[in-house]
Image (cartoon, rainbow, N blue to C red):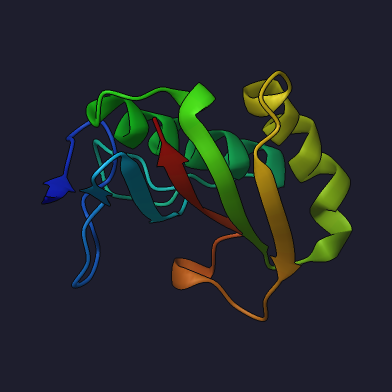
Length: 125
């Protein structure tokens, strides 16, 4: 019943974890950071640029599972600076405006590779 989901359209895991795990009708997507899936390098830029890359990565994994963003039930969002919240939201809204999953957004002291944003998701059919 447990299935590993992996796609080359999103960055490979940089540690001992899977891009996502499907368990029944649920999909648990690991935290995505702004890595370019082709180069594995961090996409440099402000929080808007990085949030766009993160959401593109997340969407690629969700699609690889046979779901779409409309199946996202909840996101957990990490920012390294809550002063970027409005800019982050402006990008996030372009992906989720019509579906509005449950969410929390928290500020953390540091993220992997010193990126500005990380997002994980739980999806369901």
